[in-house]
Length: 299
Image 1 (cartoon, rainbow, N blue to C red):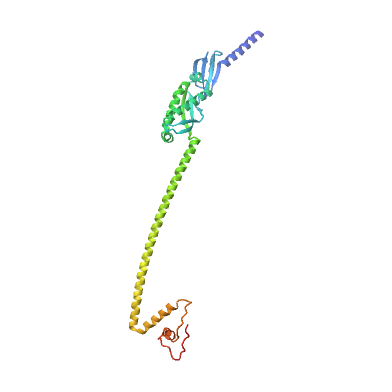
Image 2: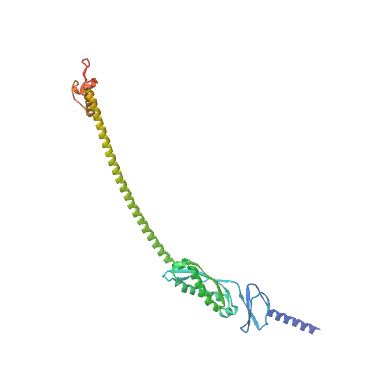
């Protein structure tokens, strides 16, 4: 009885051990390659509980999701001899698990190999295009060409390239400084040219304004002289008419003019006889000095 129990127990242990070695589980994110002495037996891609021959066969699990590879920044020379620091990335998935296992073995090695392939494709494709093509709508075609070349080489690793993108494409620091200096020099030249044009226009406007001012002043002086002449002519005509009507008025008017011309300044000093004809209109509007009125003192 004891021997029977021992045999049964041993059989159960052996059976459990064999069963545990024969059964394995594949989850939704994995695919499995079943190998027997290194040769492929089958590839399993559906999730669930699977079985294999214990001890004879082994299973290699490979990720079936879309994976990323982020190669280091690569400096490339474009067709127009411009240099660019290109930061690119790629997305891939394992299309043939057995080829993937044979060629690269695991994801770490795969990412290293793919990084080298991506950078090589970048250098080849971008070396045949200009900077304008990289920055314009032609960039889509450029990326398509890079993806095609990377995908062609990645097939040898059992990998399918889903996408290749350029994250950033920057000019090297020394090139950026050179371009900045050239742009600043160009802007300074344009500013100097605009300033010179402004000064030229300012001189033209000032010259035109001075010319117009001269013309306006000349016209005004001409009109003033004309108006003054007409006024003097009219004054002479009025005086002439008044003289013809009353000769005594003309003598009075001429005396007033003489007074105004002779005594227009505060420092004027006259030494004349108070009874002279020059002062006759000071005592009377008619020019006659009354006998009872004392003569004014001369000054």
